[in-house]
Length: 414
Ligand SMILES: Cc1cc2nc3c(=O)[nH]c(=O)nc-3n(C[C@H](O)[C@H](O)[C@H](O)COP(=O)(O)OP(=O)(O)OC[C@H]3O[C@@H](n4cnc5c(N)ncnc54)[C@H](O)[C@@H]3O)c2cc1C
Image (tube, rainbow, N blue to C red; front, side, top):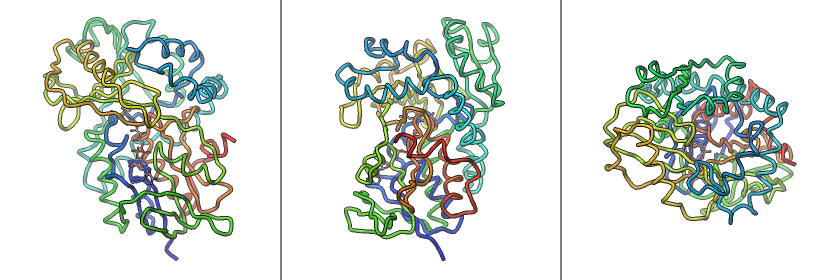
């Protein structure tokens, strides 16, 4: 019998899942109060970073925290008034940086997203939209060897899992990517990484495909999960109840609130990011360039140069801080002195849904059969959307997930 699956959330994660479920023969209803792909999935950097298997919290991370509190211009920022609320999250974050745990997390990320680009390529090819996918790598910049050495742990994890990288110094860097400021003396080319030329169109392409295969998109807010006889049987929306065989929470930063009434407390925190779009920056880039010291991307996209970056702890309600967008514009000139920023459009801010162990929550809710999670993909949600959709569709409709979902279980925070 055809299974009806409700997906709460039409971001790239919910839409990739909708595509996979519809393709596997499920009847899919996606519900979102906003336009599809208008949250984090709209404004990200477009990087398909399947080799980013190192968690954000690496050994030594504790040393970064004082700087995050005291340097208002820093790329990583915790406004002091926000600190008391986020302290428990930070505590878990730092605790997950133990070497043995870091390796477990990297293994899990590798299993989920180590071949993410294959998934994106397959889906985009079926939708006739391969023009969205660039497969020519990413370039990461460092000012000096000391800056590069700070990321040694991440690169050794990349190497361990077979993700290649090539170090370019001095003249080799200048030849590979002309125009970089001489202050950046070292580049790392990540040839197996990819990027999207338009993250919103990318996500909407998944939606279009899902709709072609029968999925429907409904405007509305999921207010709660309906349970009956010990299982999830549907959702209550602002337009009334809707029954389903399965309910999936794919509502990004807004997912954890829907689980709370069911007795699950998930430490989901927003790492807010900003971007500015520069239609006419006067520089030509073939691939995303990342200024590692500033956590800033320079991503060539349809419509110009997108400059996304910064990590700001501020929750869902605190108003955006326009100064952070200004710093991003300054970063552009710092990396490419010849770039022009005068055509910059008004800035954008969005919420990266982050768990302290850098792993998303993907899989069944053990206590409530019929209820599933697909959220918390943090800095890598575009990358891991397609593989998450593939693995979860198999978990829901069969035959069986092709990776072990235990590391992603919602119960791991109990
Ligand atoms: C500045 C920045 C740069 C980034 N760069 C990259 C990158 O280069 N590569 C990468 O892989 N990732 C990147 N990310 C991360 C990535 O964008 C996110 O992880 C990803 O978009 C999350 O997708 P999502 O579908 O889970 O959430 P979202 O896109 O936030 O979608 C969630 C949806 O749920 C809806 N919703 C909320 N409440 C409800 C409700 N009650 N009922 C129904 N629907 C609801 C919302 O309206 C929204 O549409 C970046 C993020 C930011 C902010």
